[in-house]
Image: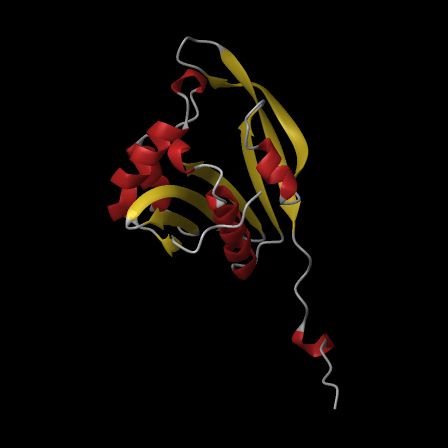
Length: 170
């Protein structure tokens, strides 16, 4: 997996970016599988406490995003998408790493996600230390009515080092 190029910028997004997010999502998620969210679903989630949006941009054009939430010591990667024309550049990995860093900074002990069985992103998540922890049969309803299983994954974070346990060496 390649490192993200220096011309790719990661920034915090907001409700004002939903149109750009929707453009990426419509291009990234195959409608056969029923995985994409509507703009109103994204806005509804983004309005909740503990939810944040991260955008990946190239020359001012949004090419990927991650929507994540944290509650207590759990975080969930709700959506991650990279425009197909920009895949293979490390954008997905950069968004995933940012989601993990932000989740830890918000006190999460683990980051969970779910995706359709057979999703090509399985390799990305495995490379970042995610392990499969569950399955939901017939979870996604595709456009044709066909049902698809969902797999759940988790990545645990090491416990934070307490300030009291740090010692200064002189």
